[in-house]
Amino acid sequence: MRTRLLSVAALAATALVATGCSTVSNEPAASGDGDGAGPFTIGISNGFVGSEYRTQMISDIEDAASSYQDEGLLEDLVLENADTDVNGQIQQVRNLINAGVDAIIADPNSGSALDQVFQEATDQGILVFAIDQAVTADSVINVGIDQAEWAATSAEWLAEQVGEGGQIVAVNGISGHPANEARYGAAQEVFDEAGVEVLTTADGGWDQATGQQQMGNLLATYPEIDGVWTQDGMALGVLQAVVAAGREDEIVVTGEARNGFLQLWNEQSDDFESIGVTNPPGTGATALHLAMAMLQGAEIDESQLVDGNTLVLALEEPVTNENLDAVWAETEGEGESYVLDSILSADDVQQFLVQD
Image 1 (tube, rainbow, N blue to C red):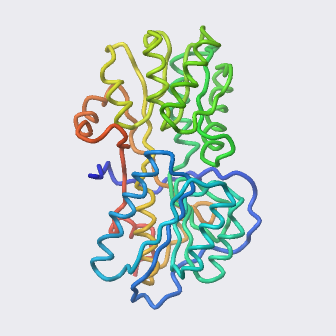
Image 2 (cartoon, helix red, strand yellow):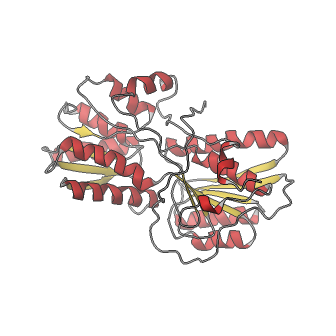
Image 3 (cartoon, helix red, strand yellow):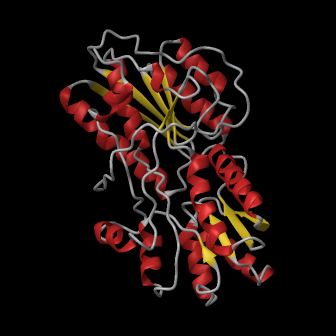
């Protein structure tokens, strides 16, 4: 898979939203405990594989790892990659600890329930990075976009489209999942402030088919809605349901920066408008570059950390009707599931490290 690089993301000045309160007081490791020579072993814990986003995320990590393997700096990339619950992901992390990895990159199923096992890892000198969503363990370095800002961007756009008094529905991801809670919490605040009424919410599981089914049910139950707010992974299914009902010119639909949605968006009339905010799968590859630098002795610049342990990557410019043609011209050769991506290279992550 060819990784499409958007403009290099810079460190944002806002914090990732993490649910709950931290129960761990340890500071994140400033650098790795090894001699810097390698070769190293890095473990990946991913507890949700029912999404093309996660498939691309793993592919990005593997692509980034290959150059270090060629150089002899990375001995092995150990994947714990399966659909599982929080307890299953705790076991994933313990498996990686027992495998003797030097660093762990985890896309967590919970913002706080993994804190204890992450602490077990850092107590043994293992660097731990949480990607895509923040965790509350202070000893973990969170790397990713601000999920609340990501959600608020499309929520503000939708609120402006439907106006005060507008009635909408929301098709969310998975209730209780940290990214979902951060996103919808931020979106709800926007709607409350704008006087937009959310009639109901439904879980679409970040799955296209489920999103389409849920949207079909919502159209039947709430025939007078003005708009739909949804998250990545379901937007194509939501739009398919709206188009199938012949209501694409009546209902405002937020979208996603993924090829399937962009194509269907591009096929609509010029009057149809939407927005797609990029949530890059390449965050995992960015974390791998950071891990490799720290394992080789680099120290993280703590002044770059928000709330003591979080690197927040700036959002890319969203896809709108103004730039849809240009974006689609770049990505139409990719598959339907391709997500617009952004990866910081090994050189790029130097901005977060202490400079000699």
